[in-house]
Image (cartoon, rainbow, N blue to C red; front, side, top):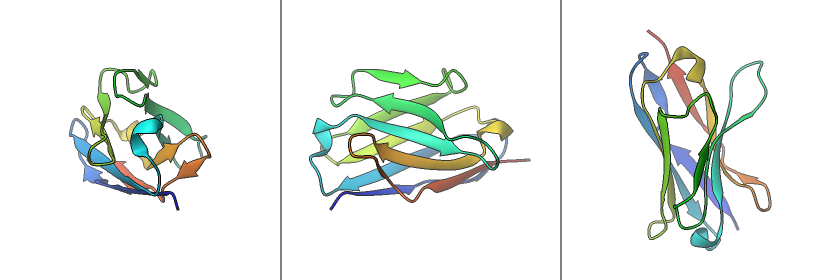
Length: 114
């Protein structure tokens, strides 16, 4: 069955960096667009970034454009999110998602605080 497992979250100071990873299994990874979503307490879920099958086409939310980079390694069935210049408002649970079929991992917590 489809499985998505996120890792790499943690606590970081404002201005710091984190790299999230999502290990995928149970499907042919290189055939699917993948996304990162996040949800902060009391807020709507927000699409952070998306990446097409071959990794050449990416999209970002305005709030993270220029600070976050989504990438994928189709050989390793892994999705990444490099997050730089983190701000307190980036604090949220981050989810790896395969939009086709609506599959989402359990999430990883990112906390940006001094």
